[in-house]
Image (cartoon, rainbow, N blue to C red; front, side, top):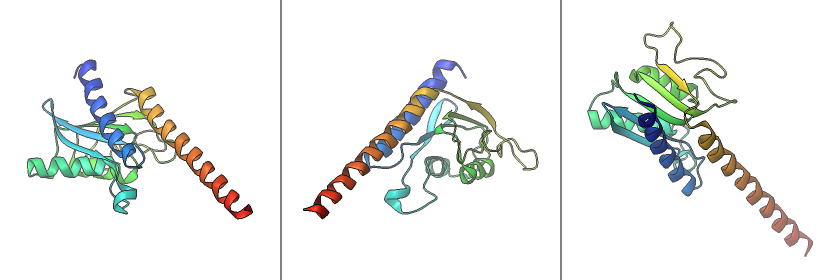
Length: 167
């Protein structure tokens, strides 16, 4: 796949992440591509659904599985703004996704090379190729700005609460 195509698909994942941000979710987005066409989309919905499994990758995999009426995504490629966690890496392996492109590394939960590499562990029956750092700065900025805004919002709420207590 050409660099311009990869960047275009990662921008689609970023668009999905923006949807998460718009509803107050951690802005992580994913798309699944097969034969140059997006077949699955997802963005974080954990806070909205109160379901720990509703990560962007999981929702994109479910979407692709439903569209294809098949749990196997053997020649598909996943584009995700943040490195997959253990749960998502497990789903990637089990769905047999061919390649994973991610933007920002996840220093706390990344299992596509940061903390460990589940996706290329030969003890599993399937391995996925990995390409990291695709539009890294944009993906990192999306997350950093979200958490910066969240901290400012919480700080302001604490100030208001303290003002009310002293009145």
